[in-house]
Image 1 (spheres, rainbow, N blue to C red):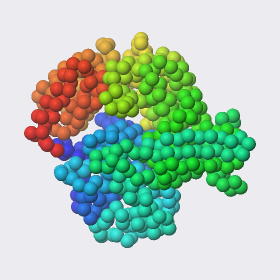
Image 2 (image 1 turned 30 degrees about the horizontal axis):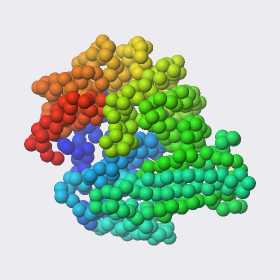
Image 3 (image 1 turned 45 degrees about the vertical axis):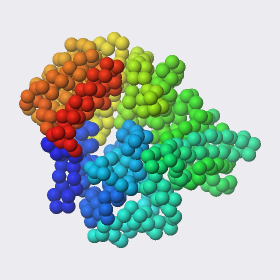
Image 4 (image 1 turned 180 degrees about the horizontal axis):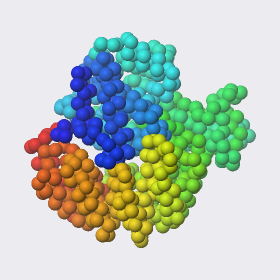
Length: 568
């Protein structure tokens, strides 16, 4: 497809890039199926949130896009693993939108001006816009949100309206005041930072949570007003390892989770009748698009939450934060605790296999670099820390990784599509982890056997992925076989481009240049080809940031070349 975008919701004729609508199990991975399902749902949902009720002007773009992204997220969550979908959406937000919020092009979800309208199609307008909608859903509740959405569509069917009209419908349907929410989240740029401290009074049986909010300066906004932030909180007993009922007032019935409304620069919330010292479970379900700092949560506390929290998102995120802190410290301490936590995760009986697979995928070099202060990211040191941790995991967990791989390589009778996708995800996550072993003979053996016996693109692609970064004969063998199988399928060849572009092998840039010179294989005028090869090469952390600077020059040259062909 020569279409730049993924799809467009034109009322009389939806338009799709071929990669956003064509799929079958022989040429598309499970991730492709879910992505396409979401895109088609997204464009269909635009019939109401975008077409029948449309935007008064371009500045209201998040009115339709933020809302429709939220709707397609919920659609995919209903059809698949809700927790895994939430994790994937938050990962995308953190990797695509948070850096945008911290950059010179930072802007609110409703920007006040524009030079070129294509610049409006950003992760802020879309993904952060969806999180703003989700916060309203959290504040008014699922039933209240449905009432508000129905009122919005009934009130404005056939009209061109504004973000304020949407918020007003939510207020009127639920009898709530969202003035501060609207005036901050829709108008202020940047990612709020929450700094949390806690204290437990054993005699009074109260637990105090102090939260301070701040937001870094962004272009044109040196200072910010306090946001209205829903903070979902739970408590896990340090001794009992069980949920401790959360009560905002003595004598009331406790709940596992309470949503605290942070509306000031600093607030202290006191929870009552807390029977034992707890470990706080903060930002449950990722209740707001913020960064969280809680010095009270040490490495051991993060490992505790990863093992015992009843909120599956916090369990996942605590493990990720544990890994992040170890990696930020150069992987000099804490690795044993991380390995032990991962072993417990893999040994979990009856766990969501899709979530287990995501848990095995630790923060990568890009995520670590983004967490560093501006100008302080050392690409070589980061790559070294990632390699050290991955090697430790592959070495110390080799037995359980192989055991889990083998167990999930067996296909049960009458397996549903969703269960099959989750099983494959976990199996392939284990294979990918094994590939970091200092002597990866087993990973190489399993990868070749999986490729040769594969009956679907997911297993075939991830078999090649497992050996992509290894300097071994199997790497060339599987890449060549993949090419021969799919050289006449332009969509599948995009996967082959990406396998080359994201490889850590020393000749990566030479390989990319070679592919670009192959007439009839790569077309610089085809956006999908460019996204899959050039863009993915620019995302190859260790190769792109090579100290020679040659990778930077190469990508700049391609941008200059592309600007003359396709400036969008």
